[in-house]
Length: 67
Image (cartoon, rainbow, N blue to C red; front, side, top):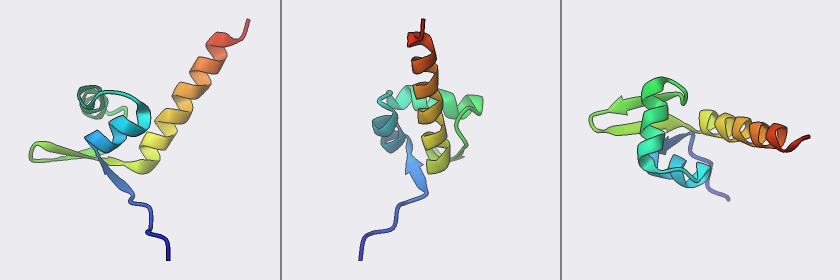
């Protein structure tokens, strides 16, 4: 049986998915751009928010490439 997809990611996991640094992920979380909760020193980030942010970045890149 395949392992279920985790719905909560660490900043490091989100950074890997988005090809950003951990620090940039923490900035986005603090700004409220990524839905996240801070537990002590660690951020826990919603996977759906990471996927939505990735889709937004892709759409913006495509829009910039269009003449």
